[in-house]
Structure formats: C-alpha cells, structure tokens
Amino acid sequence: MNVLDNQQVNLQPLKQNLLGMTLQDLEAFFIESGEKAFRASQVMKWLHQMLATDFDAMTNISKSLRETLKQTACIDVPAIVFDQTSSDGTRKWVMQLDAGNKIETVYIPESGRGTLCISSQVGCALDCSFCSTARQGFSRNLTAAEIVAQVFVASILLGKEHRDERKITNIVLMGMGEPLLNYDNVLKAITIFMEDNAYGLSKRRVTLSTSGVIPKLDLLGQQSDVALAVSLHAVSDAVRDSLVPINQKYPLKELMASCRQYINNQTAKSHITFEYVMLNGVNDSRQDAVKLVKLLKGIPAKVNLIPFNPFPDSGYDCSPMSVIKEFKELLMQAGLVATIRKTRGEDIDAACGQLVGKVEDKSRREKKFQDLRYGMS
Ligand code: SF4
Image (cartoon, rainbow, N blue to C red; front, top):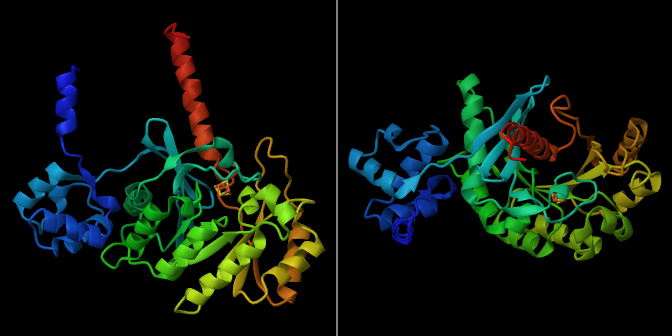
C-alpha cells in the first residue's frame, strides 16, 4: 500500500459500533443523521432483545436507512477462541478482541437464575497477590461496545440451545480488570444493561465488583445505583496492603467510609457484598472473623467467603473447609449474612483469570510447532 492508499483509508469515516451506545447516544446518532429519535429504541431492541447481527434483519426500518447504517455503523463482536461447558453447566469463553488481546467471560447457571461474569479490562494493573489475572499485567481498557458485546454474544450462544427462556438474569463485573479504572465505558455498559429497550435488568441484578478505587467509587454512588461488591479480603491494612496493593493508596478506614456513603446515597434499601478469599494462615483466624464483624458494623452487608482456587506459584493455600465453615459461623453468630461461594466449572479450568493464559500458551505452542515445521524457528 502506498502513501496515497493510506491517506484514502484514513479518509474513510470510522464506523460506530452500535453495541456500546446508550439510548441517549443512539438518539443523538440518529438525529445527527437526519433521522427521527425514535429509531434509537427500535434499533436498540433489535440489537439487545432480538440479538440481530446484521442490519438487514431490522425489518421495521426502511431499506434506505438500513443501507445508510451499513455505511456508517457496525455490529462488531469478538471472536470466540475457547468455548467449553463444565459438567455442572458452567460455560466459559475466551473472546479475542484484537491481535493479542483476549478476555474471559463465564456463565453460571443456577436454579432460577443465570449469572454472566464479564471482564472490563484486558488484564489488570492492580496486582493483587492472590489473583492469576494480575500475573498477565495490564494491556488496555475495554470499550463500552466490548463490555456489552460479551452479554450480546453470550445471549446468542446460550439462546441457540434455549430459545424459549431468558438465560442471563444477572450480570456481574467480576471478570478480568478493575471496573472503576475503566469508569466511563463501564458506566455506559451498565446503563445499557439496565435500559428497558435493551436488557432491562434491575439494579439488583447488575453488580460491579471493585477492589476499592475510592474517588471513582464515590462518583459511582452519585451517578448510579448498581449493586456493589467490594473485594475486601483482609481486616487490617498490613495484610490488605500485601493482598490488595491498592490498599496502600486507599486504606481500609477510607474504604469503609466510602462504602457507608455509597449505601447512604441509595434511594432504595440495599446492601454491599464483601468478597473475602480464604487463605490458609493469612486472613482466616478467629480473630480475623471478630475484626471483620467490627469493621462492617453499621453497613448493611453480606460476606461472601471464597475458597481460594490455587494456581501455579501463587504462594497461597486455601483454608481448610472446616476453618471456612467456622469463620462463617462466627460471622453469622454476630448477625452478619455470610455465604461460602460454591466452586464452579472446576473441570474446565483451575482459577478465574487463568483461561486466557492457557489459550495463549496453546496458540504459542501451536505457532512454535508450525514455525519448526516450516523452518522459521
Ligand atoms: S483481583 Fe481484581 S483488581 Fe485485583 S488484580 Fe485481580 S482482576 Fe485486578
């Protein structure tokens, strides 16, 4: 391609991926194109409710508008490079966004509900010491379209087998990445998940999980009433500094104050889920349980105890189940709601965040094999 070709390519207007546009964005998009604003809700329904993958399917839109949309917009979805269903029904996907950037999305069916766990970043910069995603480092933020596309693609793939019922009833932003470090795109995606013309989920059914980026958490409390989960994992700054290093910047006292403020901002009654990974001999003593009760005093809280899922060189072991159960009992005796997270999809993969690494290792091995075959190594 010569320089002129390059210039010609650059002159082409970029097509907008409609998947990442809120109703408001779509209305502005259509008004700017000389169309009526109501086209926005029509297109939104076609995309997120009827799961249309091309504009020709949108039959209540004129042919000429469909042709215009083909020139100015797109419905761009990631490629599926791994798709496996566990014996317990948990389904895991690795999605390829662009060269070198892959993310994980997990579907967890339970009786009466189906939860989709989605990613907000490729990798993560926060370096939590017990997390396998952290080992991959940080690559980039997902666009709003890429966040929403995980739900869109999963809905299509699940719908092919189960057309007659809604499979995704809950969405949790608990996959790769720290959602609050990709604030604007995550907020847009949440808005689309809750939009009646799109997925129409209530605020209780969309959960954002954060390790505690306090300024953004405070902003979220003012701009959204999405359900909140906080990755707590320790009851003292000394231990949390080593497990969740962002604690060095935003220590526990400030985090708890921010959580209290988040609850106070909510118009309806709500609670915060505190995630607590159980690490043998690190954060699982009786004293830790007592301190946890004290720490959460006055916050409507649910504690989710997560048996640690070991991965190579993690340096941690999971607490024995007897210890986890005793920890839970102590919390419940003090009046807290506490649960132990069930481990799901174990036969597919060991720990959350490891799948992308495994898929990448496999494709590197395959490439090396090809290079060897063709004498390029
Ligand atoms: S636990 Fe969450 S915030 Fe911490 S490194 Fe892993 S993905 Fe990032």
